[in-house]
Image 1 (tube, rainbow, N blue to C red):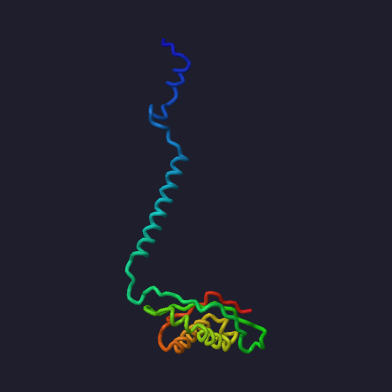
Image 2 (image 1 turned 180 degrees about the vertical axis):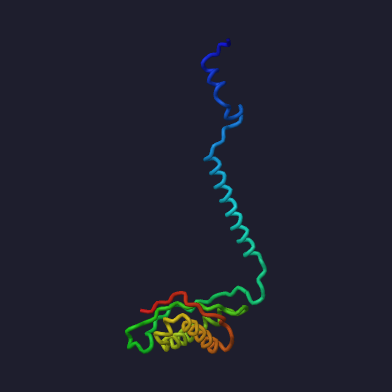
Length: 163
């Protein structure tokens, strides 16, 4: 009959959970590592997408346009007896190779022309998205007529409030 001390009897009875020198597995550690791997994958994907968009060649017709800001305008809405008004800020995409110098020289005339186009717009035309797109085209065309050429490519309402 063999006599064992109390400590060694417990050690012999308990199954070994890990080898000597090898740390026990921690489920929280695995979750942290998985989370870090997901974050790293997301960051890598974002960085790759940014790099490709910044360095990929532009297709013809996809040129980046410079914008010119006409400014903020306030006009009474047509046929509302002065009870309604429009406050808008307009910017235009300039055709490639165009200079802002001409636009700045003619700013008062372009502002006046824009006020005239907007003041003649009906409330329905201002509130309906499709008609508002038509209004943008009309603005662009009228200003290009003042500029005597296709200087402006597209109009943008960066602020648009009908009160």
